[in-house]
Length: 94
Image 1 (cartoon, rainbow, N blue to C red):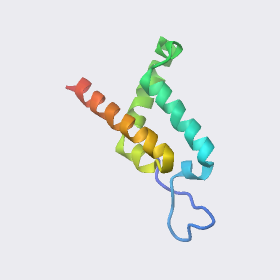
Image 2: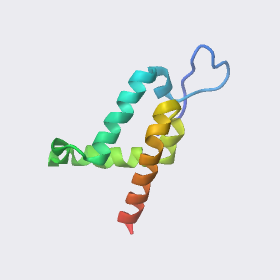
Image 3: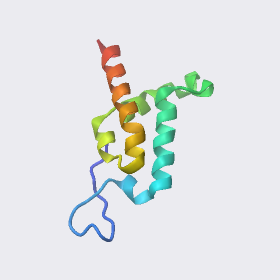
Image 4: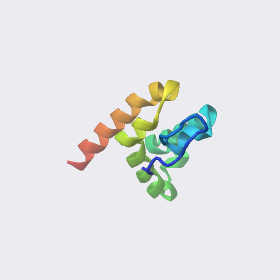
């Protein structure tokens, strides 16, 4: 995950994740896309062409760092899915 290096006009001295600057609708779209890739729920995504993207999406989606940048309703909706995927990945590595 990238280092937090962005500031909104009202943040004064601390930095925030870049995703927060995108707005709620864009954040939701990004998180939903990442979930779709990571979960491989769609037939097209199961194709070999997406193998590397799926692997990278899973690593990001299942990370604590990713969960730490989620906020509001998006955080509530995807936190448990992220933790579940983290457990799945841990099991598959054993």
